[in-house]
Image 1 (spheres, one colour):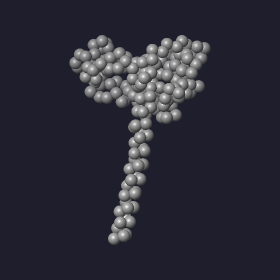
Image 2 (cartoon, rainbow, N blue to C red):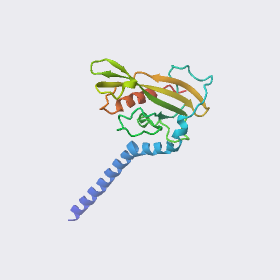
Image 3 (spheres, rainbow, N blue to C red):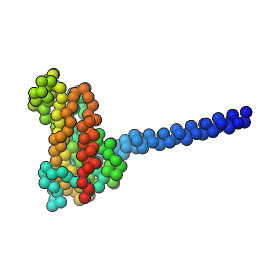
Image 4 (cartoon, helix red, strand yellow):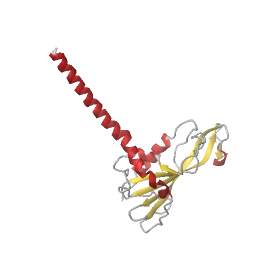
Length: 199
């Protein structure tokens, strides 16, 4: 009987330890990064309206910008995803989904860690119909389109020295279908910023 009680106690302790480890892992995988994002929420509108000027350290327009440390990626929105969001009016600014996927060595966790600010705006440039014919972006909403093409317009700012590092257009984003989520595109954006040069 005592051996059975001992085994049960051992099983309970082991189970609690396993659940604790799982809880810690889930916190760092999911909850911690959302808590970090919440800290930026009060200043997102200010960030998308920053208008720092270039300096001698800026790169030419069209050249891949660099980062000066940890970064935040803010998406500037103008309702271009209305068809995806069931016609709900989206916010003007939000943290881009690609930021959540960045490693901790690149992702700023709060305003004190923020060295480089990225403001990105996705612009729809056209649609490919089922026949392979390209249509202008303004024709979105018509039926019969198989995929949609976006470009990502980005501005990169040095937040410590307050200047515009550079402007760049990501024109190699994957084509999207209206029925699929945008994770594929955000992974491409994440990879771009993971490889951004550090200076």
